[in-house]
Image (cartoon, rainbow, N blue to C red; front, side, top):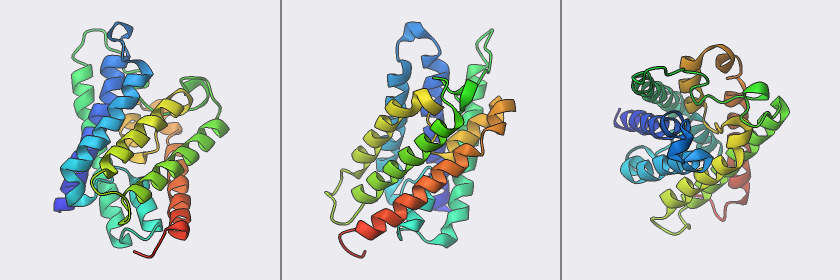
Length: 228
């Protein structure tokens, strides 16, 4: 239960911090954070939580990460469903708090509410194939960084920095394509509030990250310098 509570709080912070920066700050050009600010915000949520709860739950904050760690031989499959449930619920709680805050401004329109999308709902107008490839590849690389940075032979104490910076880079690359998911819990939390098209496209933001994560787990397990 301590691990699940940590995952709930961590994913809550990821959604509130990352999506909050998009909904509350990036939506207003005069504040000037733009895509770059949102990318940094997502990276900071993972960086801060890595050191806050990493020693409790491993700081997955993401169903794809838990699945990828299982595929890489780092995580017990009996913990998968409880972790995923805690992550999704934490994300929804973060989105709920964000919704309460955002709707306190007169004239607020929910719009996409930082949801992920493709086609006409892609920030840059990218089609479904572009979104699918982007999410698979970005999640694959994210898991490669996570598995490498947390390996026993990796430099100690720097995993959180590497993982947080990797997520920032991923957002810098893919916000224009899909608004960046690489995290089904994050996507689900926003889609539930945006509804309509966001729920209709949500399947891709579960399927692609999971595929990318499983591939990364198997690949890293193959090239790992030694059995752990």
